[in-house]
Image (cartoon, rainbow, N blue to C red; front, side, top):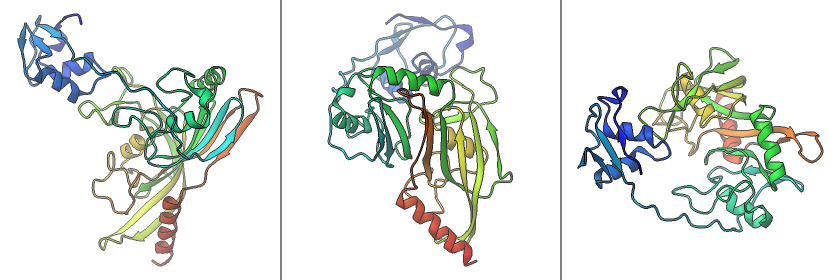
Length: 321
């Protein structure tokens, strides 16, 4: 690993923050472990994560050897397949299912399930995420398309990149929106201090910040007495259309509007007013062109039971007020 020389722009930065910018594929916590284990030297000496950098200092980095990732393997996990042809699968993913293996989730993912259903998919688009065209968060339910061959993968990736794929979500928000419909144009990038979070930025000039556009339309507004407490709460069900596919885009955008998604403890309220163990976010509709025929198809997935049951309870509470 080559040595680094501290530039004048980096003077005064904490060592761990500067390192995180040099190694964006590694978490700040992991980098702090490197520093603590003397895998990072400043002018040849061990340092602390909080050490402030000085001009022209030499930073030597020798990351610890990482064990090889386990090979992917097929698992007989049930799949709700809504459509299948020789090129692709359209799957209604349940909340709680991770899309592909990652640190902390080496198995039991959608990819493992698809490999069992379609053994020929192994290696399509790479060994780590075979067939994956786009992703949904672990606790987001709904529609996801998976390519079964490289030709279809390239075609679908082109459609996503050109923004011709239509993606609609249903989300239940805290409070009542002042504007019942509108467009959110707010760039998104990694949060400056909390690696697991994304954040809205004023411009796309900062490194890693990309444009993000969301349209939304109110479907219903509920006024309900909260079960836990005496307060009266309002909640807004919206249909949101993604024009870009940034990480956590809808969760970040609605939190930025001060109307976080119900059940989202990362971007919303730590103490939730409604008893839901996941964010109320469901990928309900997906429309794209079939690579084999050029025909545009639209698919829909109904709300899962826990989400539809919550709406029914809110409707009943609203009508009783």
